Image (cartoon, rainbow, N blue to C red; front, side, top):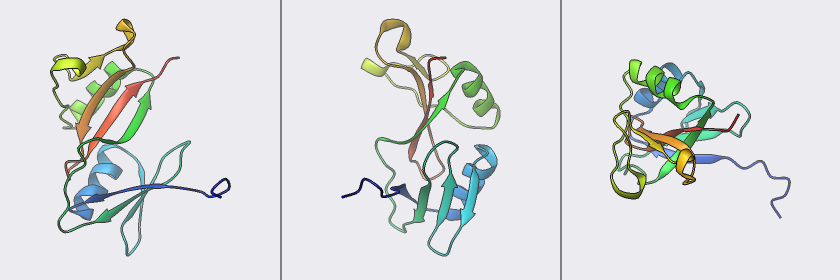
Length: 129
């Protein structure tokens, strides 16, 4: 039924102007505007649509993952741009930089989570070269 459909992801934000600045300027994505919201063009992937929602509640899960070759560099570069990384305890315990180092232990990729201005959770995760 959906074999040839070009699906896309979407999620809400509470302020389109702050989202446009964050995704366009801080993260460096191509952002387009429509009367309904913002479109993000992700290299090698489908589009992502951000829509305004007055009673927005941030997602409590990761809504967008950015694969990177070098997580140390990605975290350092984003930190220099003012991005703050989340700190977790327990199974997904992160280090002082906010990186969960699962690869060496066979527990998934090295990954670091951060939030957009609306509080939605995003991540950078290291891909195998």
